Amino acid sequence: MIATEHKATIKGGEFLIKETAASQVFIPEEFSEEQQMIAATCREFLEREIWPRLDEIDHAKSPELIASLMDKAGELGLLGTSVPEEFGGFGMNFNTSMLVTEVTGAGHSFSVALSAHTGIGTLPIVYYGNEEQKAKYLPKLASGEWKAAYCLTEPDSGSDANSGKTRARLSEDGKYYTLNGQKMWITNGGFADLFIVFAKVDDGSGQVDKNLSAFLIEKDFGGITMNEPEHKMGIKGSDTRQIFFNDCQVPAENLLSTRGNGFKIAVNILNVGRIKLGVAAVGGAKKVITNAIQYANERQQFGTLISSFGAIKHKLAEMAVKVYACETACYRAGQNIDDLIESLKTNGMSDADAKLKALEQFAIECAMMKVHGSEVLDYVVDEGVQVYGGMGYSADAPMDRAYRDARINRIFEGTNEINRMLTVDMILKRTMKGELDLMGPAMAVAKEIMSIPDFSTEEEEVLFAAEKKVLRNLKKAVLMVAGAAVQKFMMKLSEEQEILMNLADMVIETYVAESVLLRVEKLANTQGDAALQKDLALTYLHEAVEKVNNAGRAAITSFAEGDELRVMLMGLKRFTKIEPLNLKETRRRIADAMIAENKYIF
Image 1 (cartoon, helix red, strand yellow):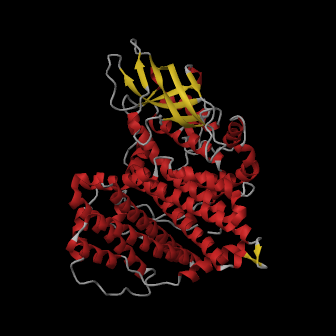
Image 2 (cartoon, helix red, strand yellow):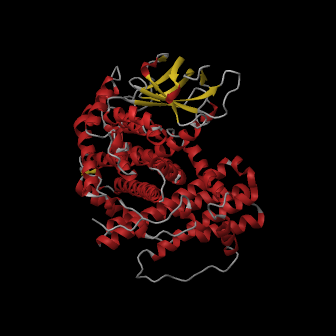
Image 3 (spheres, rainbow, N blue to C red):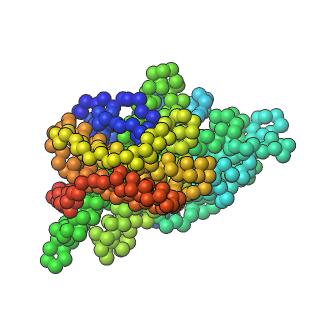
């Protein structure tokens, strides 16, 4: 077990203006024996119950099969990881629940049902329920006796969740609400026993609340009907339906939290969903890489195994580099959330409030990991198809399902476009509130690009000294472009969506590159030789530099002209320099190691 010192006061978004020491980050190699046993239990469940039945799950005529598999997961405790012990769960910390999500993320349609139940279906009650609601519902949800569904999206209300038209009218005696409305894309809708439904309260006088409220609705309350399951591109085995509420009477005590607090509930629960989607994508991607390696070690062309071809090694290595980096960043953020939760509880905050505050604080990182994880998985499944060649296009090979199932992740939990804009928007809002000192460092960088470049070199014996200088410069590139864009557009920057997405890409790549470098530095300092991991980190860093340069150039040329344009492009060039590295050889070493083991090994 590696000694950890990662508990430090870190705020969401501060990575842009502060350096993080390797000792301050959590790395997956630090998972305890107990946590590794939990992960092993999840893998065994997938191997025994899910993977042999993927076709059956996808072609099931009713939701009973998925529901029965959820029952089995409940028997193993997989549904109660985040439920407090006093309510029948295991009360695991955030990063442990992330680990469960990662491993089960390789379960295709089943993982969608599981995540919907344990995340958005259960956590609103954990975080916002009163003691009576927790006692009534959480034990049943933790055991799997009851299944949950989350009803937010409507036909005309997707990313703009607060525009929903579902209405809840309070009775004159104040004893119950009558709900009317339509919800769509509801995962687990066909077998759910409990629906978390968002609606706006109508007080009966024609006045409708501005913000949503949330309600806990049991299927037996009546007035609930639904369409047949949706026919989808992928995740065909997950039960997805339109749900209709027709004069559904809900006891007043089933209002979750307070009236008008539903939008805040939805936003905060989405933070959990986003980062967990990112880490679930990691689990799915690892399985795809292993399948691709095993196929490459079996398939021969021109009398030679295709795993010996440089083009195939390049693909396998690139897949591994992206997944390793994404995994690293997810657990770094997850531990930051855990550490803040413990700090807030030590200072007297309740468990539920501490969790909500920590998730809110790291909402930036949650959004980034959702974007990065979903796009890494899409890259991996696309290359997986390519490694399989013609067989990759066959529905009889595993890449068909992996390719189709992966696509939804760039839409789930807010589209990647929305999450990119949210990332930058949250950073800028915190800056304006004085919670994040972004403009001071940005102005310093603006002055620096007018000065003589620093040609000094770091001491070679310091591990990753040159690479850390590269990272500092990447942050300067972000600050330079963000600062100039803010000065140019001021409050109208929110209308420049293309620039916001460019900035988001710069921020995401910088965060992930720093995360993977810190992981390998810590690993090398504590375990000694980490040669292959260094190859992974350096390969990712070089690619991140190129991506930051491209995104920065796209942003700068969108708003700068004349001398300002030339100066900023000069600054961008200065801040995205990195010493050349033979990336062909780093990738070959990575690929060869996996090919020898016949699986993803990192």
